[in-house]
Length: 254
Ligand code: ADP
Ligand code: MG
Ligand code: MG
Picture 1: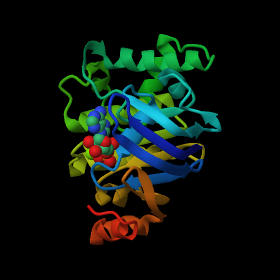
Picture 2 (picture 1 turned 30 degrees about the vertical axis):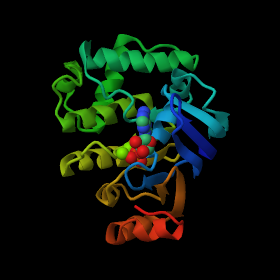
Picture 3 (picture 1 turned 90 degrees about the horizontal axis):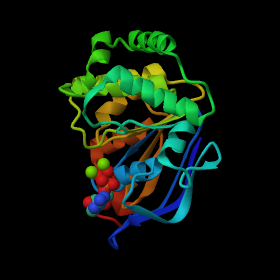
């Protein structure tokens, strides 16, 4: 599904190199987790995949279903099935959540050459998804993220994900200071949306999130690349022993 090969990325306006030959393959239908110390480049990787400005790819590739993502405009990436959970974290006063979701969904359908949903069809779909995810329909009427609690923002994020039906979901939860309840919401959302044709990449600083999500594969990232790959036991090992040992095996320190 997602294949990152020898990816090198630097800041556009500075000499700082952040990703230093990153390799990662996420298979269709699998849930992968990336853990790693602060400053490893985890968020940078997500930003680069989403097409955010400010970064320069100097080497390597990132393909989704065999198509080069790095050549696409951000909206083409979404149409290709990529979803990033921090994609719409901003508050948008004056724009109802419903309107926002419908615009995002129809933009994606249009880019795929599909017909737009009518107001009625959309309403039916959004109610269905909200119900499955146990999301209060009242939230749909409020302006996007305005005055939402942390938990409500997370719920909204999961609802956006459910509506857009992506193939590859990337959730960067590293710096969001998730409390236990919010973590539970994210985990339940991911678990509800798991499907044989949908992959997840969950980026987290905390092992706790992975207690609920149960990833198929865990990667440890540091210094701009993946250092080690294993099963869920790797997350537990990190929880118990920290990163020092893994870093040291690669000549790195914390
Ligand atoms: P992580 O998500 O693993 O904590 P980041 O991708 O946020 O790591 O950051 C990786 C490194 O790149 C850090 O040293 C960070 O300070 C630096 N960095 C990332 N983006 C920028 C930026 N826009 N300007 C300056 N430094 C940046
Ligand atoms: Mg960080
Ligand atoms: Mg980060």
